[in-house]
Length: 375
Image (cartoon, helix red, strand yellow):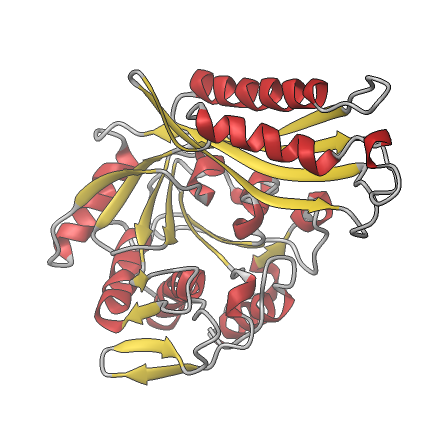
């Protein structure tokens, strides 16, 4: 967790994983990467780390995955042990257990199998990059190098006994607002403020129930304006504002309604704010599909295997559908039915983040159980 590795800067932690695998006797030829980072809008140091292992027993191939990157709040963390918890000694940083605990659980399982020469079905181990900025690694993974897994098991946040069988979908919005610049002290009436337009649009979205938690009849979703950039000086009517937002829902059609509400609100605000000659502003809304929702049936093989292994570890399996995005969203979209399991991380993305060691050790046992064929 102390290794620096925010999204796009995963090179050092990827190198750590490779070195540990090589030291355990894994042939260098078995460790492959890909160029997922080259398809990322954020650039990046490294692609995904992919290890494909032949099986010692005849069975469908299984995929185990976790993501290497952390959120920027984790940079500079100093992990320390306090009782049965790991926390950051620096009160200004998060810990990075999301998802270094998942990364480590996969690594422990791999090292155990290699060092003890345990029987196993054909396996693919996948450590992804840039999960925290839109599931980039899982989205652009080189599918051909995965070896056609029949099922997947993604290790991320939460308790190890919780099996995530579904997750929401998300659409990202970038809204460019164009106004008209003017001297704000001498002739403000000659300007059209892009900030005014954006403010009115956001206020109307909140007023009409399209921002935050959204409930429209039986339909549910969320949206959030997360970033606003505008203006350069207080004495200039701002002529450009850029707004970044997201819309989420388990229902793709309802998510489209949320996006349509954003378009309508910004276009109406652009018409409403005019200069002394009646000229208004302009808006351009770009939307990008982040990931689609999924829900797995309880009878799916990956769900049954996960439940059996959790039970064998002495824990009660519970099933959840979550409102966050996971690498499992894209793995399912790629045709690999995938569940997610926790690795003991708590209060992730905050300075109060911690790792419960008992739960982490349980996650390691579950990862090994899944990798070696089940209960």
